[in-house]
Length: 518
Image 1 (cartoon, rainbow, N blue to C red):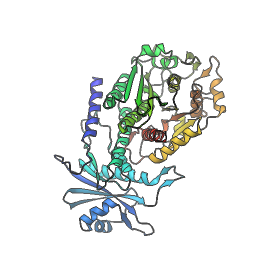
Image 2: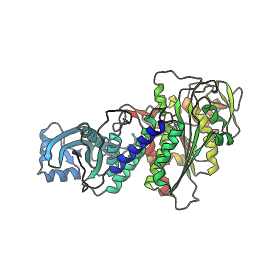
Image 3: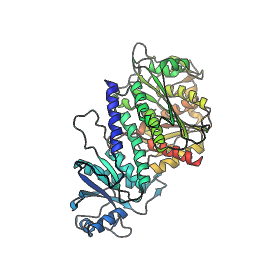
Image 4: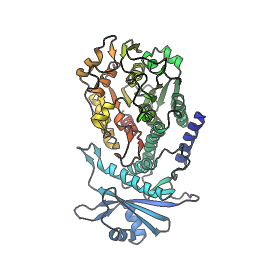
């Protein structure tokens, strides 16, 4: 029954994607059409508005009626504010107009993002949601001079996980309005679809997305790209053969068998090109194990596989984009549950590289599964390693949901990740990897390492990163702690409340940057 529901979810998502239109000439049956347009604030003129190219063309088509209505319907539209007009064009019963802010805005050094792109995402998301609430099921969207950002805003803003509800939101198809940049639009749709896949996996309940169901879902999503992708779903017997004692110490408390998911995307013209290695923490439900979490908000721990979800979704997106780069994705998938078989606080386990670990807190399990995956990943001689994990509550305390925390031994790798995040608006922030923290995890009473820092909660995100570094020998490695960005309340305006799927688009943009830089 579980697999049937998962397959239905995937098939629904695929059908939605297939019916999304990029051609204004395509006809739709039983359509209720709408149009989303943007307007800029006119520089140096209080209350003035500057129409985008598409909005100006539409205004001319209706003899200036749009400009006139904007003037008489209230104050000038500020960034993110909107108006809806009805019956002003025979093809579009509803027209939403949304403020884009100032035309002069671009990359902002203090905010570490491109403000213009963020304004477009926010505006197109807001306009599409307004029309969706009116049960409009087909929308044409203004490219606002950046069709990729417009497509991202529209597709991310319209996503809602309602697969298990009887009453669902209106299903919407979108297309670009009055612009020739269909390439940018399609690229934006694919970036957003990648993040929405991660959101779908993270939001789905843990009894629907077990380790096996997760692996099968990714396999189905990659079926379209079989000529470039190899998938290995490794069993418990293989994990034992690899002597991944740290990973097995986490999975042993659950009745669900662990899966080690291994994805190979071969997009580079040179098949021997060193791959980018992405590793994602895949705890499909984290109860804390014997070190049991408090029950309030434990349900959110269905998304503790957010690292695996974003890594796998970014590889699905790279395949869809046909990026000319080789990528290997590793996702150690299991549940962390209490039982008579579960690891006990104080137990000592042996990782794949032979290092022993004293497990003083079974709720610090993510670093254990990642340790073995990182050891295995080195066998591929990657050009760079990036691991992604909802690893510590401490990173949420430090950064909140503003940015992903990045711990890295490579200035070059940091620069690539940061550059990608400025483009996507899904920001990263560099955190310290001092020896100060290493000493706190290597000072263990019974073993080589302790899975928690000597001073308990102090610098928890940093000691977790220091622990992972003990399993890394590569010169270009980065650990992304995404616990703070796992979910969205209202901080990112173009994402609805729920699991965020961050930082999938940043990973895709980073991979694309590596591909095009050689």
